[in-house]
Every structure is written in structure tokens, then in C-alpha cells.
Length: 331
Image 1 (tube, one colour):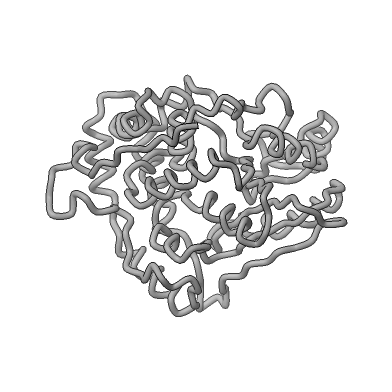
Image 2: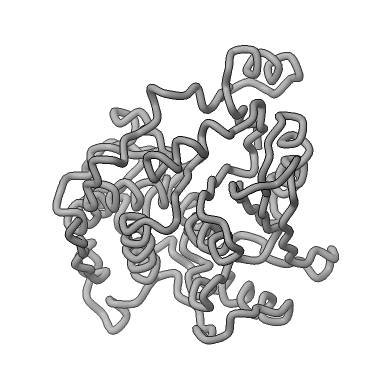
């Protein structure tokens, strides 16, 4: 397959007035790209830098200049600010970044990954996943981070403020630990069944993903961001994938191209300006790569049960009885 390349553009391409900072990632921080180990002192400094970033003028300009019907301004601002407001470390509470690789069952060559910051309750849900995987009969490994940020090559930490950019970076981190079949699950996912069939799909197809409701998706992306991603992909971004559960066979040429292009988007920052930042970016990259073997898994698995109501043991048990692999808990 001929490698596809994106042509990357500046903030000016989003309709932002050209200034001396027009080519700058709006989430940029200062940190050495050669320092792979990030200390607690480093995290404290990084967190201070993140708190000084204010993207509200940028989001307000893009949102209120749009004539499209969109989700609320507050929704866009909150989602796009997720990276700069996350709690990586909390010295006063005694919360320090940790990472852990847990053997589940008999182990093996399959690895599930996840991460969560210290704010909210996702970090609590995250740390319960190993026991749920064991109860489901999974044989493999679970690699996860609480707080901090994945930094497998030393440059990812520069993109810590880019909203929801961490998933691919954590998968690369798992690859560096020796795993080739890697499945990301959100920290709020409650494993119900052995996910071995999902890994078999990854091994055979090279990727695991599902599409969302694309009629609804258009309300959650700024028209300027959609135009930017469409330009990058040389095609209209009319479909959005779900990345709540997302898997890759890490050593294939298509996966390596996906990772390369994802890093370029993270370096630019602006492709992540939407309510579902990494999902629209990944959708653009998949559109660009056009690997015919990378078919979505929607029709093959009952993969995720979602409810708008409060969680109860009965609802979780029903989702398991109905054959779902995961139940998405309230968070």
C-alpha cells in the first residue's frame, strides 16, 4: 500500500487571524523532547504550564462564527479543555502518577490498556478493571496508568494538553513493553466477557473499531475543524468512529502509518478541536489510509452496553446476559 501523507496547516486555515503564534499548537507546553522519564517535579511544572493555557477565546471565535447547528458552546469548551484541566499529580492529596502491568489469568500476548487522571472517578473505576477481567476469564495483560501521561518516545509529553490524545500513545507504550495486539478500553468500561474474540479480530483484520451515529456526529465538530480534517484526508469526514474500545495490531505498515499521522495531528493540535477530539482525528486518518482490510466490527460483536440511567448490578448482569463484552459505567 502506498503510504498516504497529510498536508498540515496552521491556525490560519481554521479562520484564525494570522499572528506571530498562528503556527503554534494552542495546547503547547515547554518540555524537552529528549527526556523520556518524567519526574514528579516535572509533572508539577507541566501542570502549572497547562493551567496557564486559555483556549476559550479560540473556541469562542470558532463556535460563534459558525452558522451550523452545534452542541452547546460549553460542551465544546469543556471537551477541548480536557487536557489542560486534567489532574496529572496532586501533591497536597498525595496523588502521584503510577503505572502498572498486571498479568491476568495465564497471561499471553494480548494486552488491554487504559489510563485516567486523578480528577473525577474514572481512576477508581480503572483500578477495578483487573478483577473484572479475571472474573471474565481473560488470559493476557492489563497495562494502565493512574495520573501522569504516556511518554514512550520522549516527545508525547509535549502533547499532554491536546485533548484525549493519550490513547494511541499508551498503545505505543504497550508495544514497547513487547505487545503486538493491543486493545484500548475507556476507564469506565466494565468487562463482562472474555475479550479473546476481539483480539482474534485484531490479529486477523489488523484493527478493531466501530462507527457511531453519523447523523448525530455532525453536531459535535466545528465546521472549521471538519474542513481541516477533510483537507488532511482529501475526503469529507462524514463518519466518526467510536474509540471507547479500539484495538490495533501494532506491527503492520498501516498501523505504523496511522501512528505517524496521528503524531503529526497531535503536534499541530488544531485537528483535535471538537467534542470527540481523538475520534474525529482517527476517522480522518482511517479515511486517508483506505485499507480495505480494515473493516469495522459493528456487525460482528455486541461490544458495548450504554445506559443513560444510573448503574445497578441488575443492569450490568443484564448486559452480560445479553452478550455484550463491556458495560460503560456512569462517570
